[in-house]
Image 1 (cartoon, rainbow, N blue to C red):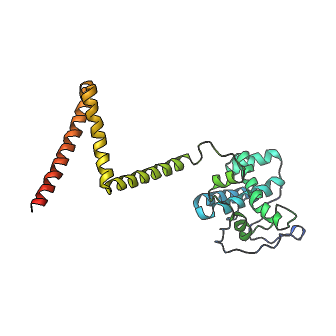
Image 2 (image 1 turned 90 degrees about the vertical axis):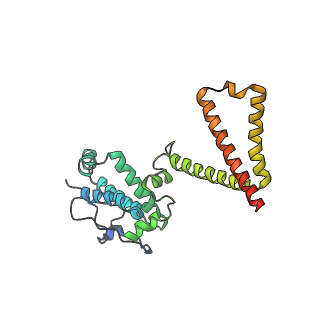
Length: 242
């Protein structure tokens, strides 16, 4: 299959399309893809993106670059075969990776005055410097941030709910601490519900209206509270007698 092939990241640029000079940034080097077909190189980058959280976006950008280079030199049918049969992804997914490359590295190079978005020599510094400004460090999050894919309706729902529950639990604990450390609030918290319960019993015959199971549960709670209060009272009287 005769087509333009994406050169390795370490390859020298062609004079006709020399890459712009980009200031290097401290970065972990990306692993070079083993010798093989372009499709195998793409599969390698996508596999590394899944295994290396800190470099996910960098490997994803390099995979998008490889795919963009290959797409330029093949027909539609060949492109579909490469994506689906050789790489194992859909053409739509491949297009998203290409868009990711153009939205990160391509945009970064254009901002520096590059004439072409698709370079022959892609360096680690170019990739990681272009991805460094993304707030999200996950593939899906970065795609959403760049507008390549739409934000799902439930995106972040589980995390937001978990955070909300944690905040509610912390607020409840703080409120209990405030009540426990304030005698007036503590007495009001204890006496208020008991007064209401007594009023419901006296004026609405509360206990006669409850079912057997509910009445047993209420009786157990009241009995436990009575025992705890009586024990605390006796302990208090004993301490004073000493």
